[in-house]
Image 1 (tube, rainbow, N blue to C red):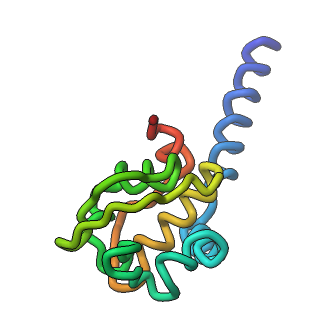
Image 2: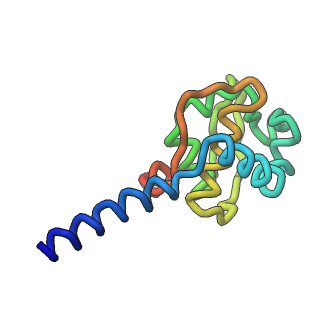
Length: 132
């Protein structure tokens, strides 16, 4: 009986811990806005418009439709040719050293800003699932 009780406590503690760790979407977006200002704004600019032929736009960006590819670019950096909204870019975006939570937050912010709209909620687990 004691063993069963210990197992149940461990099980429910684990569930409540994982539920507790999930940040509300609104907070993730707010945190993502700060991360964007610190790490992304220099190239992609205040309204995500980017600089044509130099830094691709994030505003109304067709590139963001591929969530995995977008997370991969933030997580590992991006080098080489890409097309965004029909325009070719061939630059280098270095890995910014963001952790999984920060990447999830900035993705949640970007996916809901400047004319982008998404029902997808990016989680730390989703970010962790993207491999090099």
